[in-house]
Amino acid sequence: MKILNLYACLGGNRYKWGDEHEITAVELDPELARMYQERFPNDTVIIADAHQYLLDHYKDFDFIWSSPPCPTHSRARYWNASNYDTATEPVYPDMTLYQEIIFLQHYFKTGKWVVENVIPYYEPLIPANKRGRHLYWTNLILPTNLRDRRFKISNTTKELQELEKFHNIDLSSYNGSQRKDKIARNLVDYEAGKTILDCAINAMPKYEINSLFDLK
Image 1 (cartoon, rainbow, N blue to C red):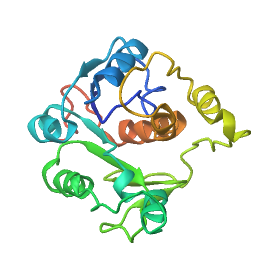
Image 2 (image 1 turned 135 degrees about the vertical axis):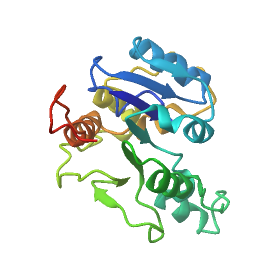
Image 3 (image 1 turned 180 degrees about the vertical axis):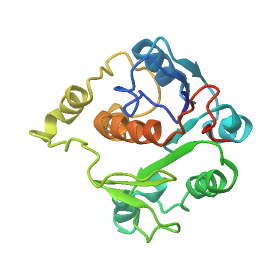
């Protein structure tokens, strides 16, 4: 299967996908792209704008996973910005999220797709599947339980270390501009990623060579 993993970060969703698929990961942050490549040397990693890459290359793939930036939709940021005593400024919600959902719904007719994001501070503009602390827009039928693990911080002073252990990552070599704890918090649990990929694989038509019953 040819898979496109957009806004790939460190590949939290991809961790249990194995190496039997042809995976292309797109990440804008060069440092995260470097670390992703080190984790998954068999994947093709592209440093580019994932939003534009989707538009230009969606026809080349069987399954597309997109996790557009979530901060402008998050309840935590809204709560901070709506409190006039904080330094967090209000911002418009980034409509990249909904652009990609609408685009995939109407143009990507030959494959399977999922767009993942946080539960927003407003009513979602397009209905989604709520699983845990995430929303999923998809043309797949998702199970009620994605088998994702629940992260429980044991000591807030060690949040980053606990998150690194939970996701089996090491951010010590990251030299980019993003906060390490933010990177770790935004990763999708790899069990959820595997469950969703399994749904996509099972939903793909199976063909018998030279069979009268081949799907056209």
